[in-house]
Image 1 (cartoon, rainbow, N blue to C red):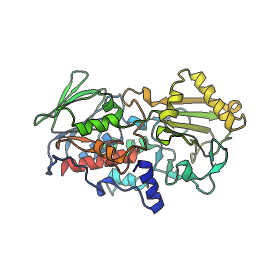
Image 2: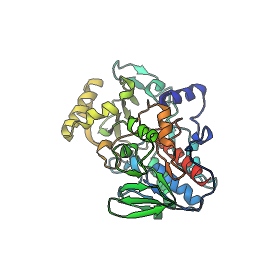
Image 3: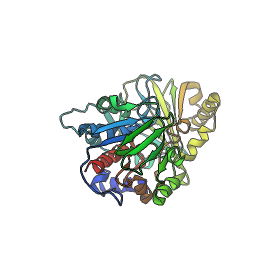
Image 4: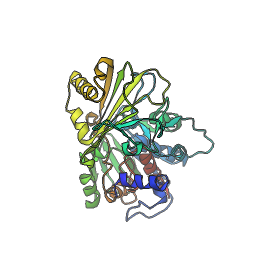
Length: 392
């Protein structure tokens, strides 16, 4: 079963995408239980790394987060200068119920003040790019999904998670090797800095492991290494265009074939926002993303997209064009791609998420139990699972 099939099944049954740790254990074969009181190193300060650190802080466990970039957030980066509301350059939507915010915060005394809005499945319009005819939001890929209003995933983490872990994050530290052969785990960086810990949580994008940026001693098991090597990680590209009027619907869907090759859509990025600006978003992964990535000249890229939109909307794009920005996730040195294909095999995903020898744990949108993946909520829930497994 692929992620798309699993989520669709949940929608048909009228149930939420379940919390993985309630479904099955992700413990490795050599993981005894036991309470933990040592130190944890977390590699990566994206949603999973921040969630893991936050939960360890709640338990009073010593930890440190090592981040290769100069800032936190990973692929939930947000632009706050292009328009008068936050533009998510990476993860944009809430794909599950709002209860996920409480799951992450894990504190009933905290009032979570984050506004999201669902789509109006009756009145909003989604069209098929090929035929120009209206399609259902389910066909377009949106049913439970919600947009953040005046905020973003990054704003949520900055408000409720980051303050309690800020002093524990070390930036510009790119990890090169992890030696977990002894009682203490030895971690080295490209700047010849060394760290020791009793446990390590790997919370880096999967493409980083595929590119062998980090060496493990002893080498990862053949099962784990095969899962890493065989995983299909999509390229990722987004762009945002401002126009002087709105000539486009809520969503323009594309039927990409074969389906595992990627995804693409245009969408109203200003949907639900308190703004008078007209912002059209372009979201693309896999092969469609690679088409845009290959156009390195910015003016050529602009003209290419405007020509696409002119074809769709009777030459209304070019005369209404004002400006644009773009984000190529393949070019980001600490991401190198978007995320794991939505059509990946769940058994492979399960293998990616398994811990090693009660020492090395994995948390992130690719390292789950195989019930769900490739989203911020899946990344956070994988961190919840990893911390629970580590300390119990």
